Image (cartoon, rainbow, N blue to C red; front, side, top):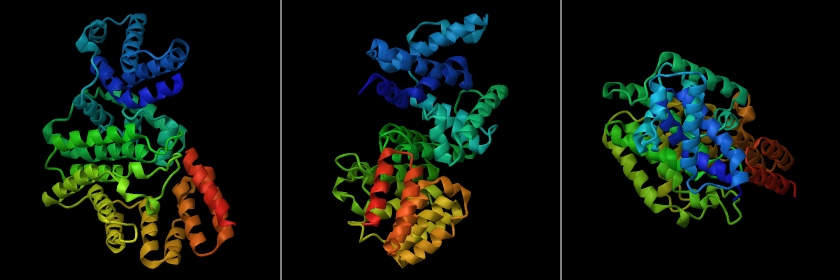
Length: 406
């Protein structure tokens, strides 16, 4: 691995803890993220020239702290922030704990921010995603995401939001936004929107770690356990989702013996825990129930598609979105056939959010191919390939487009 790729890998793994550590010191998440970005850029410049340090995460933290001290000295600030930063002891330089990292998530998801800004800011600060990657996650232009992040930082600074977990009485009301963000981080790891990797385990595992910490913190909240179940059941398929050359392997073709049975067991246990609380099930728990249907099926053909379709109908009521309806159409293929599924997909075609979503074209192209409309299928798959964010997805779609006209 070359030095630049090492920088990017270390940043993905440690950027959240880096920002949390700096926020603990300066009590300003916007300023902390700026210092962290400075350290990241310094690493991109220095590591290729000087070599990768023995402790790369520590190097980033030390560099960011020095940048902060330099800025404060330049501006002539002599207050508590400077005093904290200037203390050169192990406590001051320590990496963030899980609780501090979770505190950073709650700060980024604070009610003073609009809902869409909470998710974007947390993905940036905790997940280490670029504005382009976040834009793809939200199906929005990166410029729009950049503006949201900048405004969110200013809002948090002006509101003087403290760097701490909410009081216990406030936790339930704050939970929904946090779960949304945690799952978005997992989704970016589950199906990466940039780079050469189909799966980014670092992001997925980070989100799963957040989920487990939340579950320990809020054991009476079924949606926390539902989210943990959903992530672990989906992560159980990681080893089977790529072939020997890194190519994507679709669910229908996966070797289920490669599914992680430990993660499946953990996921089913978390789902059972959510159900035992006997509260109304939320969207994450319903999605976990869908994933459980796949996990329990010995083969693709033996999957209980009727049950999954019913669960998607419930999910459409709880969390209506064009992507949920698109996924429902895929299940409809297995229940009522390709024409019914294509009709459902075409009903979604006018939604502008799906115009930038490559999987819409991928699914539509597959359905056209199943109906024998090969030329139309090839055109749709080629269009989807042009929108695909990763090399693996582009290659897969172009191969399917070529095969459609043979």
